[in-house]
Image 1 (cartoon, helix red, strand yellow):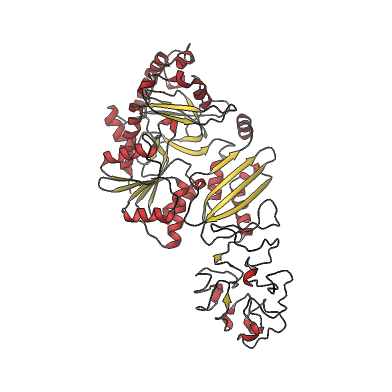
Image 2 (image 1 turned 180 degrees about the horizontal axis):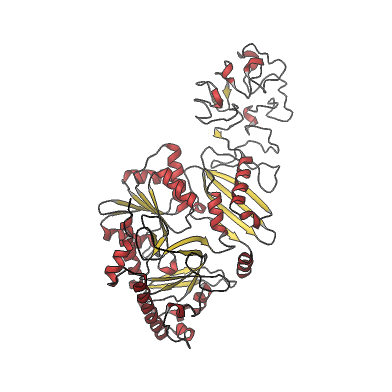
Length: 582
């Protein structure tokens, strides 16, 4: 089925009175805008006047590539001297922290005209996903004038749709309810938050009326895209923007093969992060942008710190606009993007934190899974310890240091292979002939006898009815901690209507898989899966040690679910050299 041309083409052609029938026409137009910008900045900004001294106007885009680069530290150092207008003409200032050692913040200044450029981009760009009369929910900050959500809502109103501001997701149940009540067909937000929403709805059989979602503010890994599309049953679009670009920069079309850059406002280059050489289309490097139409604080060859490439050739939609593919923040050759691609392949994972220590080649991961019945054990610091957590607190009443307490709650006398006399699971012997308060002596176990205290290792045919398949015996009335499985037969390890709540207990041992009414997820499986995924992604060359801790959540998201925290210790430039030399 043919893909319609990007909506940005029509917008740019009408706005700039420019034909996008050929790449040369667009490049010539951009060169003209760059020359005008150099004159404007050199005339009106003291900082640029000094910066551009001795540079003649470029005769080609290749000549422009010889102009000096600037970075966030330059913004912080320049301050007001970079402005091209009076302070009275500034309508919004955004302060961002830099990675410099002095910690001086950088400030981005916008005029009302600068923000209007973004509103216009949002107005026309959103027509790729929605149309007049539909309702769109914005899961981004929107209450402050001039913030990203506010500008998006302004653009949506011009499009004739009904925008509904929500803000960042914090309660998934409330988010799903809001989408249903407002009959939302399109939504905009953060990838990991929509991933959590999708998993939440999928697990509960909630069907939202969403047809399309636009994801922004963070790198969108392919597994995240696929899982969201599958769980929510909608089309997923990607958008790239940053404060320095005026919040809007590039948007996917229906081909979903790279994001088309708003090239009437942004000129993009990809440079080698160390040598700063301009790279060919298709090569990965650092994204550098020049703002062609900004009044307050234009940026000339600004290093964004983002790992990216410009895709070669034309898009299937036929647009001449260059397509951007982003790989997250720069650092160790796109390690962050590779982590996303690997880890988000794990079922139920919705977020993670990571810290990498290059000097000792250690990666520390904090994995967060979407499951209100989730419990895991054993922290990375001590392979023999247990670290069990869930949204409701500790899954255990005692801190057991071995993995022999199968259900984690000896106080309930629910320990399949231990002595439950006093809540202790230490010797593996049910010496009081009372296994988990099931009193096997008084149960019908097909003639089996529990008098020898061995009630834990087989089927019911030989008196062993603690942990295996009860399908061959009458064990339907066995009581399990905090509930019972009395309504079902334990066929194939599936407690039909008991504590396992339609969960498959795998080896037929429902007690073993039951932890205080939560479904058990094997911690060893997580270790093995995560390490294999990292190895398959080629990341194991960076790590001598991987430490993993895990937690679970239900419908409440904490602030870290909004955007992952990934920290790479070490000096920025030395890290880059090490990465690219490798």
